[in-house]
Image (cartoon, rainbow, N blue to C red; front, side, top):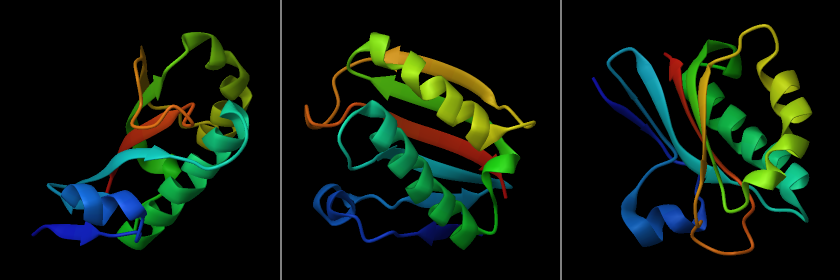
Length: 117
């Protein structure tokens, strides 16, 4: 069975995707950006959106097994470390950080997670 989780974000309808998909015992959360001034505020906002999607899917950040971080400037990743350490706590997932362009230059970080359902 596949369950699709929609958040109502503007890009979901424009691009044709949903915030998360529950399938095969996992919750796959799409790359998520956050609003705010600066990478730290955007990181927190993205995590809040991800948490909400995971709750709708019956999961949580504690069940995260994989996370990918995408940033247009790798130097901006370090200020996010304390936020991410707090979010994942004693249950850190396997992680990858990639420096790349994002859909809009105003975005400073995009986060994508896979959790256990």
